Length: 107
Image 1 (cartoon, one colour):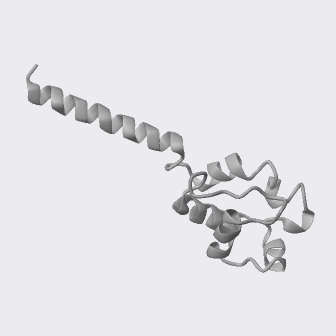
Image 2 (cartoon, one colour):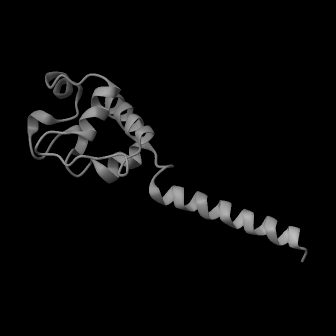
């Protein structure tokens, strides 16, 4: 095998490893899968098991002055006392925006 073929093979393997690592870190997770992984336990069907008034249904969000994707993302990053914050390491900015859109469309 020529050195150029070995180098090409090494680059291909490295690319596959990078794609696998990104997949494991969540960069390719769908908003629905992300919701199931990070939110559904406390927010089943858009409710809230800790505080019924802090659900994800449109009426609950509006009652709490949360109406836009940006406002949901801001809340995900710095929530109230009954919710753990999700920083950009836990949920990337693009995932947070997709998750917020999913919440607005679904509930």
